[in-house]
Amino acid sequence: MHGDNVKTLCASAFVEKVNELFDEAEERAKPELARGKTNVVAPVTGDIYDSWYSERCEEAKRKACAALAARARFKKDHPTWPELPVSEDELRQLQRGLSQRGWWRTEAAPQIIFLMFALSLRYHLWPAEHPGFRDFARSVLADERTKHTIRNNDELKKEFPPAPIVELFRATDSPSSLDFLHWFSPKRVTGEKKARQAFARARAAGASIEEAQNAFFRILHAELPQ
Image 1: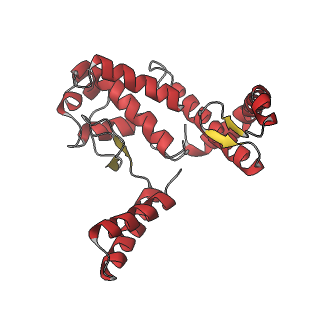
Image 2: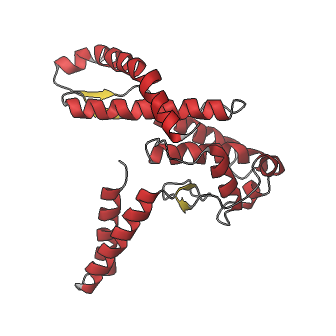
C-alpha cells in the first residue's frame, strides 16, 4: 500500500472511529475532569494529552489515526504476522515477553525485528512514508550492528533476504543487550545536521565537550517527533 493510499485510508476509515474512541475516553474521565485534572489517556496510542486544549486533543487524534493506518497497512501486507503493537503498553508487553524468554535466542529473532519495526514507527509517529516491514527487515539483517543471533536466523533470511535498502540508526533507548535500529528518516538526517552544527558552534565559542553535547541533544530533540 503506497503512502498516499495510507493517508486516504486514515482519513476515510479511521477518523470517525477515533472521534468515537476519544469521546468515550473523555466520558470515562469526567470525574477527574470535574476536579480540574484535564489529562486524559489517548485511545490507541496510550499517550497522555491535556483535554483542556483543543489543539492537544486534535494532535492526539491525528496520532491515533496514523497509528491505526500503520496497523492496517501492516495487516494487509503481512497477514500471517501478529497485529502491529502501537501503544506503549503493547510494546512494553512485547519487550517483557522477549526479555523473559531470552533476547539471545535465535528463535526470538523474528519477534525482535518485529519489535524494532513497531518501535521505529512509533518513534516517527507512524508516518505514511516510513519504509515497509519487508524493506526494514532486510536492512536490519544486512546491518553489521545487528546481533549475529538475529542475522543468522535462516527463517528470517529466507523471508527477508538481507540487503541495505533503507538507512538505519541505533536507538539509544534499546535494551542494554541489543542494538535496536530505527529508520533514519530525512527529518532525522536534517535534525542531526543541525545538532552537529550546534555542537561545533558551542565548541568554537569555548564550551566544554559536555556543554557542547548538551547543545547537540537540545537541537536534536527539538527537531524530532515528540
